[in-house]
Image 1 (cartoon, protein in one colour):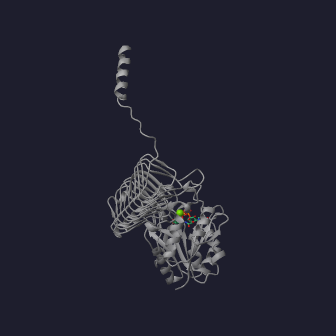
Image 2: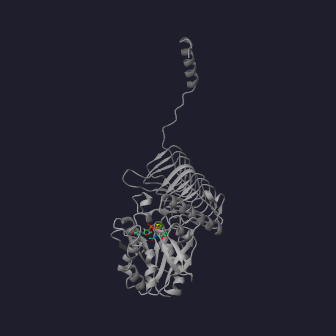
Image 3: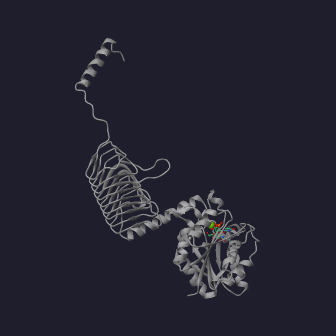
Length: 450
Ligand code: UD1
Ligand code: MG
């Protein structure tokens, strides 16, 4: 196969987002838009990817680096053609085909790149286009009599008649690298926005006798995100995709529309999810587990047949083994809970290890933080932590021990011991009856008003 390289144009200022964040770093399903684009390119066998970034996009630069991409800077934002040309610094001598994409298309799929790459084989240059239900401000694609691209007209440069066309530019060009950069270097900016448009590239190719073949792709896949409203729409479509994928993989979603996924959520077959559940990044739920309503999970691993919620919160590092029960208003962070252990109500378990079959009473808190450092709590197998106990870490409650309700535990508790830390109960027989009698008498002598 001819080697493939990708160019992601991501140096635009994203003005319409009205955000200090680079547009491509806004997240869809818990992953930056740029990450979705990179993943789709990788899916099409494009290993070498160059992201074109603006000088002030430090966050995007770090992210692209972590994702194994190269980055080049477009010093000033002179348009998409100018941005594509900047990639020549890395790919000018690339011995294969380059494929471009706008960095603001979170729903793009590997298939979109494959389609454009396939069409390129017919002529030497190709473009992916889509039929838009509402073409809005997209560039319009006009075809010649043979079905090749005649030209692309940017919305701002288009006549009313041209705006009437529904075939739009998705920006996925494919061409052999040397030719591609010869054309990008020759673009000019004689248009309504005084920008170097990548969309003028086919005109230059024509002069070299190369026609631009057009591959039609799905509109949803290539929707561009230019505003907060479009970001919200992209999120909704991505959620639809993720819900459909979860159902197809055998998870039960009682009310799919109310369940929110991250790009990497894994639900094994026969997981049951009740309404109104949010999966942040990094969650795996194993077969037979139930995630009950209004729970929020991120960075968590839920074991087979475990029950989580309603109203539970699992934070990063929560690892629940088989048959664990985490009930309402229980928060778990960086804590491994062994098989069959239960924390059914109102508890905080942070930086802890809970042994098999342990029972964590309502109101139990692991006091893991002293304002400077985090400390660990270890609860042994079969231990029973009475309600409203504070376990002041670092501390260990050994296997089989009991902690009496209301205790503040600051010292380790031996295996099978009982630790109680509370004042002795004081009882004064008849006190309440005497108190009431005295109060009634006082009221009677005052005349009992109001
Ligand atoms: C662009 C296309 C339009 C197409 C639409 C599809 C051009 C001239 N227009 O319009 O035909 O229908 O996308 O979504 O290509 N960028 C840079 N440097 C720049 C300018 C932009 O890197 O100087 C990047 C942006 O970060 C963005 C992408 O290029 O990721 C597209 O720019 P954007 O401003 O979103 O272009 P559109 O107006 O959406
Ligand atoms: Mg755009």
